Length: 134
Image (cartoon, rainbow, N blue to C red; front, side):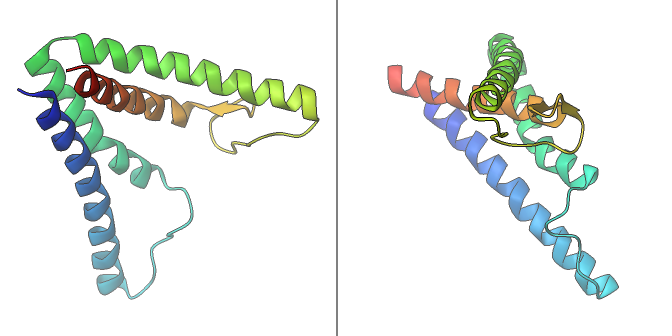
């Protein structure tokens, strides 16, 4: 499978998950005649947004080996540590927080909810690097 095709599938599936989210939001409105909380956090919406990238990563692991799983785990760990360090450093130097997390925070500099997003971003970047190097 070519790296260009893998990246295209990855991006398409991610965009498709966003379209599905909007679709279900509209269906919810048609049935209940009340707006879904568009700008508020819900765990179900968060999990729905992660479902498709996780499925794509699983397909990559099954077809191409454990390399992308290792990339996911490494990027999740490194990204979370980097985000925490930058947030902590900025707070120490400037006296104000660069960002805050209100749910599942890790000393309010990062969040447990951002860990899988760092992993997904790492897989996406590794696909781009693979395409650029080929």
